[in-house]
Amino acid sequence: MINKDMERLLLKVQKPGRYVGGELNSVGKNKSEVDVRFAFCFPDTYEVGMSHLGMKILYSQFNSVPYIWCERVFAPWIDMEDLMRQNNIPLCALESGDSVRDFDFIGFTLQYELSYSNILNMLSLGGVPIKSADRKDLFNIVVAGGPCACNPEPIADFVDLFFIGEGEDVDLEVIELYRQCRKNKESKGSFLRKAAQIQGVYVPSLYEITYNDDGTVNAITPKDNAPMPIKKRLVMDMDNSYYPNNFVLPMVEIVHDRAVEEIFRGCIRGCRFCQAGFLYRPVREKSPEVIDNQCHTLCHNTGYDEVSLSSLSSSDYSQIGALLEKLTTWSKDESVSLSLPSLRVDGFNDEILSKIKTVRKSGLTFAPEAGTQRMRNVINKNVEEQELLETCTTAFNGGWTTVKLYFMIGLPTETMDDVEGIAHLGQKVVDAYYSCENKPKGKSVRVTVSASSFVPKPFTPFQWEPQDTTQQIVEKQQHIKTAITTKKIQFNYHDSSTSFLEAVFARGDRRLSAVLEKACHKGFHFDGWNDCFSLTKWLEIFDECGIDPSFYANRKRSFDETLPWDHIDYGIKKEFLINECKKAYESTTTPNCRQQCSNCGATQWKGGVCYEKR
Image 1 (cartoon, rainbow, N blue to C red):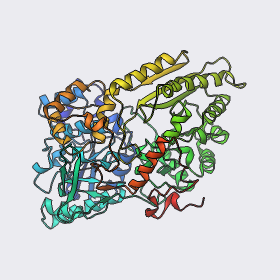
Image 2: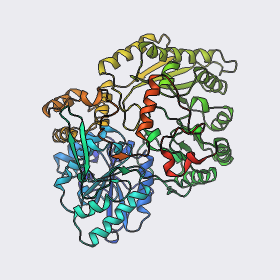
Image 3: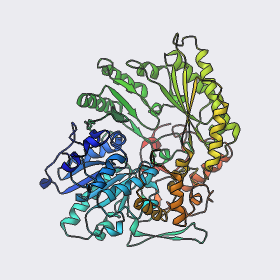
Image 4: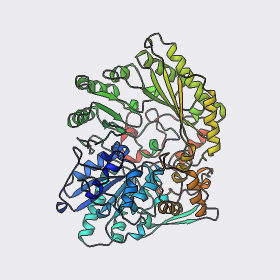
């Protein structure tokens, strides 16, 4: 139900469909019949947020509980925000049209560090005090979860509690505790102290941080019997975990407008730069029967004609052949196409090829990550050049003419020869196309080479490594451009300045809250978008706060330094990560989890790939 004040502004903005609500399958409830109202806030535009699978799962799960009404809130684009501020219209939820300040919980998903300015801006736009200490009552409880919650310290002053790990179980436990505490007329402090005892909950106000003279963290000390460390929560039984049988169907075209089916969580590979591969260990799979049923149900209920099989590495699903066999028994007849994002070079074969091309061919995407074998060994990619070329040849012979290759630059130990290898590898893929006997007649090949900048992330073997300076990254980007000698290759690369700020907040500590607070007061927002981002303005704020951002992004850290996130436990032993970092220096690889257990610590979860027969 659209807010009447907002309705008057719709003809003055781009894409008014972002703000009207009332979509098919959205959930409306009677306010008088629910005990807890939850504003699920996605700190980006409607098109981005409506594509996010985690929001789809939790929105449906929360609303399946009779006493909870979960509503969606997205960041208004700059044209609408300007009008809202000019007309004193607060940020509203799509379902009821009520302001976010009317909700018991205000929850954010933390997918990207550059969304932090949007989080504070959305609170400000909703009329909610941005600092946790200024919200005194058992109301407007600000919570957050998602991958960036693994280092919550930069936004610790603004969030009352963080969900560490996967949210399906712990979120509902906290909401039920809140319901009981409010019934008993307990204080916000009492609720937070009790919530901190639930595994997977981090309450930053219950931990004191002290610093050394050199600016590093000295100690992290819990108060009021708060746990130390805070252990993540996982959903171990994927077959019986909650999954929606319906999606809210968007009013406007969104980034990923299709049915999405999660086939497993985690990753067996252990790429040393990849945060998700460590945060979500161990691998836990759904059975082919459950996946098939959920896919068919989603397509029937939503009308979508494409299903994306979502995971960190789709071809690593242990029963991928049997699964695709099941899915194609109905998808071909019903003209539903199957999409397998995150395919590995060494997991693509004729069987997969024949199944995913039955309805519609789109471009194939692979991620070699590095241009030379030495660098691929450094990052533990465990992919040989010949495997990539054979895989591309298989695809070209099968009718494909478009291949996207993802790389990373600025990785530890990288040289200019490694960087130049990216261009050379792209050329070899082009050459492989023209060497194919069965390539499509009369068509040319298009190879897209994309290079992102390495960002050292917590809970990875590279968490101690410095990020290249922006000048070094620009030099490497230009070197690749110069080394590409054919128009068959399109080269894309990311702005190095955004990667710099991402690294600052990824490895930052609680002192960065002052920087974010000042940014909020100055109206910063949408820093993940080139339209709004300005590194110069950010550097001015860092200078005003007396903080050197390179201390967080470009400094190599010693293995014995206390890291800002050392009180968070994702079940991966620090000794394992240190050993993996040392192996990277020696260009030594580690077998994947199905080949050999590397004793990372994930066996403590008593399930998943750790207990499969090898």
